Image (tube, rainbow, N blue to C red):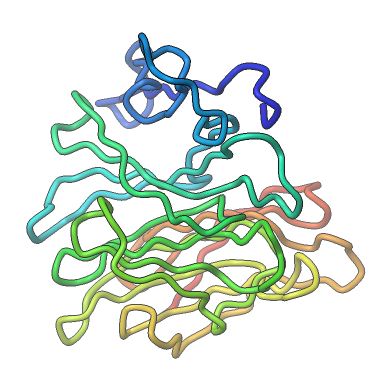
Length: 259
C-alpha cells in the first residue's frame, strides 16, 4: 500500500442492540481519504496521494459536553507519496461526524513525519487531546496534540516525555471530572527500548502530570511482553484493560481499581 498499488477503503457498521446485529456496511472512503486520482480533471500530486490508511487502532470518542457535544471523532493515520526512510511518509490525522454518521469531515493532519497509530479523548472546555505513536522512533515518547475546535485544527503539538514509548500503540480515555478538569487514563508499554512494562496512568490535570500509575504486566523473559492495549471504564472506580501478552500469544482482559 505504501508503494501506491491500490488504496485502503474506510467503512463503518452500526448496531442498536449491543452488537447482536449490525447494519450493512457504509463506505465513507471518499469523505475521509485523499486519493487524488478519482477526482475528475484534478492535477495528480504524487506527494499528496494518501497510500496506507488506518483508523486508531482502539476506540473512537464522542464529545459528552460543550460546543461539540455529540461529535464523534475517529483518530486515524495515513502515508503519503512513496515510502521514506524512518517511516517519514506516515502522518496522523482524524475525521469526525456531527450528524451521527450521515456525513464525515476530515480534520487536520499532525504534520509530524512518522506520526501514525493514534487515539483521542475529550478535555474540559470542549477541547480534544490527540495521542500518537512516533513511528520514526527518534524520540521515544508519545506525540500529543491539543485542539480547541473539536479536532478540525491543532493549537499545539509536543512530545510528552512523561509518557515513554518503545514505538508501539497506546490508549487514552476520559474517565471522570475533578475540580472542573477531566480525569484521563492512559495505557501503554512504558519502556523506551522494548514492548514491556504495560502501565496504566491516571491524570487529574488533563495530561500535564500523571499522579497515579499501575503496573499491568511486565516480563523480562519475553521479547515483547506486552504490546497493544485498549481501555474502557467499567465502573466509577474501575478501568478494564485489554492487552496483548507474551509475544502476542495471548489477549488478556483485566480490571484495575484506580480509585
